[in-house]
Length: 415
Image (cartoon, rainbow, N blue to C red; front, side, top):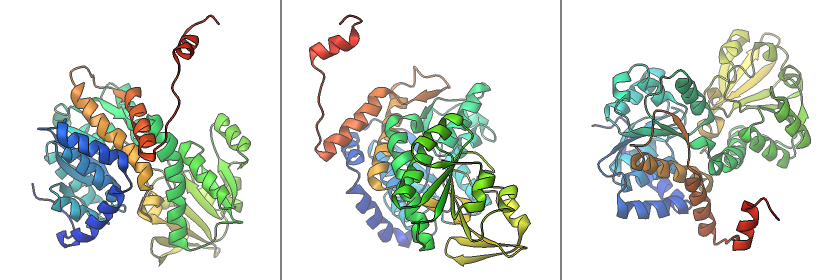
């Protein structure tokens, strides 16, 4: 199939980015070497629907080294890096993506990727799987299985499974410990602030930062904000998480109160309308709005437009909304994932963990395909621990092992 990309001449720049992350993704590099010898995905076609930047590109090349034919499409049009996509095509990967694709182009790219006729897939947010279960149901029956990257995508998968509609097994990679403990917490925490600071060029210390949601991503964002000497406010619906935020040293209040004092807002819930009309009506002048949840629905853009007398771009990736009373708010990255729409995403060392889980999950799906039903599966503990062990090995770190007496003690009810 012919790729659909912006410009193949951009490939040299993209290759430099891929070469850089390769030097900082030792786990994926080791798997790539192993896969090159074993070819566990030989004869299979894989489609990868993720944020198309350098780390994802290296995952695609690792899957290719495992013997698969690989096609990629974007899970977010504003996170696509055209030079990286060009480099992938130059390396023999089929690609359907370009930065800033319209909604129509985005859906076309998803369909073109499925026209590639994959056996296995990696999805990010569930758009690819959703299409297979709505407009391409017949093709869904031919899929061996797939792996899902995000909380949002897993919520959609579990909804499908509850209704008895899921057509093939899916691995919940986001629920693996080596994913959420590091990617969600430390990756999101760092990359969100990288993007906000780079985009705004404004100081963080001394400002009131409002974090909507205190899951693993919210914990990471709040911790980094605290480290930047911001005053951190958390909004929550879960009383247990609210107590956790309190005991971590943060203020907790409803969004309607936080809106009056917040300087920087970051939503990380996976739900919609976290900041909406009633909040905009009282929001502090010159507040900065950003989202780190998968879809651009956490900050309600329709409500923003309805209340605004003017909207204009005031800086790259910053839209200024002016209300009738003269107050202004600034929306970063069109309300999409700010760390990717306005930055480079998570650090390479963090994505090394997540993408190693993805690559090993694809191998698991192929090896166990006769034993798996159309359900949402956790990543097996042995894969989780293998990635953890490979990470420590890459860092030259050793850990203790249980003695036989210790093993017996832990497995017995007697002292």
